[in-house]
Length: 217
Image (tube, rainbow, N blue to C red; front, side, top):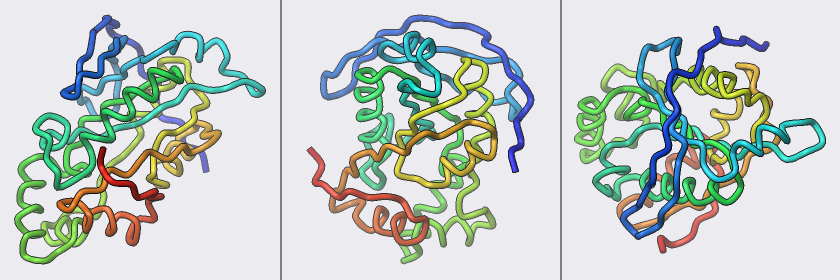
């Protein structure tokens, strides 16, 4: 059953040059919104020729490449190797710049449980629990992320069909239920390191993430 969320509107758009730690640069059209259902400050980054992808958003033509990326302060900012979030963010920025589309930066840290709770989950993982078991032990859902705001943001940008850049089938299922047509799910690389091997294996085994294992560049 489709459950289209209430409409949101674009609040502000501003051009921002981006530079990643490895030297990669691109320019984003950063968009803010009014009316998002959770009241948080989520961002959409229009990358590459995203305006053209909107004009060609028709049944017989390519659609914008879109990645909903959940905030990960430790991985995105500090380069933590306990997860693959930072490398996936970097990869997404380049691939969407090439293809044209949107990077949705969603403020739902720690699979939606928050930064401090994520640190508590890390402590439990150090005792032997996996990432999902640790969330449950703290009284949270295994994965509390909700993509309603992502659907609102896309509709505010006049995007109704997307090529979804993600290994996570739950993102595609939620967006489809929320009225966004997912024409294809495009896998990201999996940035494997000794520190995150167990984490990635758990995601593949427990949550059916599509993994194409390659060493980190």
